[in-house]
Structure formats: structure tokens, C-alpha cells
Amino acid sequence: MIITSTDISQTLNDLIREAKADRVFVLCDENTKEKCLPLVLSSGTSGFPEFAGQPITVAAGDDNKNIDTLTLVWRALSEQGATRHSLLVNVGGGVVTDIGGFAAATFKRGIRYINVPTTLLAMVDAATGGKTGINFGGLKNEIGAFHQPEHVVLYGGFLATLDKENLLSGMAEMFKHILIGSHDNAIAQMNELADIFSQGKDATALIRQSVGIKERIVAADPTEKGLRKALNFGHTIGHAIESLLLEKHTPVLHGYAVAWGMMGELYLSHIAHEPTFSIETLRSTTRLLSELYGPCPISCKDYERLYALMLHDKKNLSVDVVRFALLAAPGDVRLDSTASREEILEALDFIRER
Image (cartoon, rainbow, N blue to C red; front, side):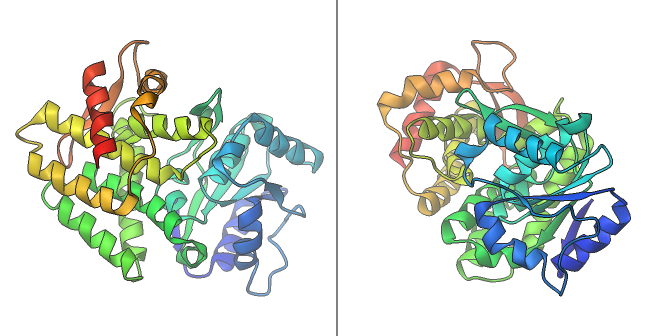
């Protein structure tokens, strides 16, 4: 269940009491332990019902979403006496919710967990839907499991802890939800979203609306056999860019890579589905993304590696064909679309020219 809270500490205390867990563990990273956990433990509480003690704390950053960090979480749960009847509360961004969810999916063959996303990106994407996992072998989310959280608790107060770049990272996934979910006024909605965040207005309603799009898709297809593949729009190219930059030790926030990936996949959508996906739609959408996220730091020398990374994408049905979720028009998603190698390289050219 997705819950919007105005008092995060009270909400979690209520949910934990209802869960009737034998022990409660909290997972966070170094940043959220300092900036967000005090908000979670405010309102005069010293902890949660059956709280096992000190939070399990992992290093921040996507380069730490790996087997070593996962092992650290497993070991902490084991040494502190977690059982199959325990509850894990993940307080953090997408790295924490992904690792925490996977630890919960696998420890004792599965324990319950609650996600408390502290970044905009985690609120609208990673914390919802039950996809958990780690990076492996230089590939994004290569190892993981589907394991749904008991609850996802959205608390707008955490947004005040974020810088502009992290807000933009989350907005990219909100733009994606607009593009796959809106038929008539997607471009107007994208511009409205950008304006609301640039002016510092309350975005709670838009966040809940964005989460609702993903929630409905996941409910219809929880293990990504069909419709849920629509949520991968922008991610085939985006994950390749993200993995490449991680290899180069110049990592970028996930949403930036997705924004650049969407630009490339919007180009592929246009060449595959003209005139329904018009040149005007391509220009309007990519202009906004380019203005917000700036140039993508890749060169033509990176194309072969990027293409090789795309061939490893989990959506592919064979080893030599890259599959995408493309748009015949905003709101009209075409699953399992393909593109030739030449078209994909053209899309990378398109991204670099923005």
C-alpha cells in the first residue's frame, strides 16, 4: 500500500505496530542517517516498536549497490538476530530501497519490508513496484528479485534535504510517466511539472499522481510479462549510458541517464512511427529535456561499448537484437520494439547533438 504521510514518525510507528514483527531493523545510508533518520525518529520517539537497535548503515552511491554491500546487510541481519518474522524498514533513495528490498527478498527466503523513500527519484520510481536488486559485472540491476513491500510511505518533508540535481533526477522519471501515460497533453504536463519545481511550489499532488501511474501498471503486471515493460521507456539507452559512465568512474544520477536515454528513444519513436509521433513532438519533448539535463557526456568513441551494453539489457529476447519500449504517440507505448544497429547509433548521435 502506498501511503502519503504528514507525520512520518507517527505513520511508521502505526504501521510497525500493525505488522506485529518480532524485531524491526532500519537500513539507511550515510547521508540519510544524518539528514533523514532524525525526521523519522522525531515527535519524541526514541525508536520504533521492537526496534532492534542501531540502524544498518551502508555507503552512499550507486557504485555501492553491489554484492559486498548486500552481504553487509545480510550479515547485520543475521548477527542481530533477525528471523523470518522480522521487518526491515528501508530509509533512503533508490540504492537503499533496491538493496534493502533484495536483502528482504532473500534473507531467510523472504522477510517483510517497508520502503521510506527519501529522494524524489525513489518516491516516484525505485521504492514502488517490488523490483529489487544490485548491479553486477558492470551491468545495472543485473541480479535481483521481485518482492513487493508491505508499504511505501511518501513524506514530502524529505524533499527539503535534496539539491537541485537530485530533484531533477526524480523529475526525469515523472516525465517518463507523463509520456507513457498521457495521450493529449503530455507536453503541456511536462512543462507544468518543470515550472512547479523551478518555482518551489508544493508538488505533492503531482508526485502522488506520478506514483499512481506506476502503481496501476505494476498491479496489472507485477512481474513484467507485458504491460510493465512500458516503464522501461528511456531505460535501454539510459542504463547503457549510466553503466558506461560508472565504468569510467564519472557516475551520474540515474534520472540524468534516463533523461538522455529518453531523448534517444524519442528519436527512435519518431523514425519508427512518423507521422503519429511527429517531428514537432520530438522537438518539443527533447528541447525541454536538453534544457534541464544539459549535454550527455559521451563521445562517438563510446558507441560500440554502449551498443554492447544495450545487448545485455534484460528485455532482450535474443543476444543480437536490442528491444525497446517506444512510443507511437505520447500515451501509446509499443512494447518489444526493435531498432537496427544503425538506427541506434543515429539515436546516440541525436543525443550528443542536443
